[in-house]
Image 1 (cartoon, rainbow, N blue to C red):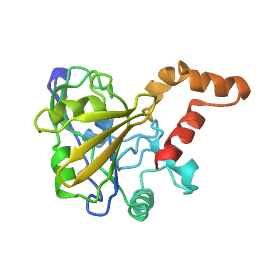
Image 2: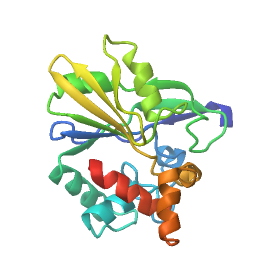
Image 3: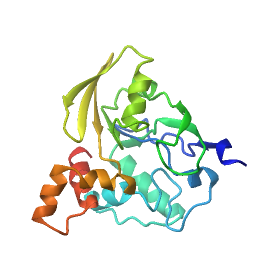
Length: 221
């Protein structure tokens, strides 16, 4: 198989849509989750990459005592937490083509999106979308905005500061969207350039990008 032919498909169906009041929306897990060749420490579930930070963030906020290994126990821990907290997951990218097999959002081509708006319309109990990234090209908010053009709805700014907050008026009521700082190592450079992070770091030299995300995510989870 040539790299240009790699079809990066999302390996996981949306999770806990019927029970969710909050919905996590990202793009795609790394390609190895599509091929099934996982790293030691990966968990075979949404955001299960050992290199990702979503589950360490949740672990810190909720004191979950999660295991980080490719076992059914690790998957069950995460599913139990999501159900108990009424959180669902519905990443917006169904599939993409790649010329280079990596996890870069910018490397996605011929992107096919999931119909997240239809999910909201058919699950009116969902009141919040938590984007794991912002409006930079091929980020989850970016794709959601593109997706919205198919519908007579639009995002209205509530707070333009990071994490950016918008509201979306649907026939059954109002949805809030929150564009969180991406829980990936690749986003650490962006975190380091944020004044809020720099101010906190100056007060505590041991303060990390993970600490910063924990503060941000805690407010919205």
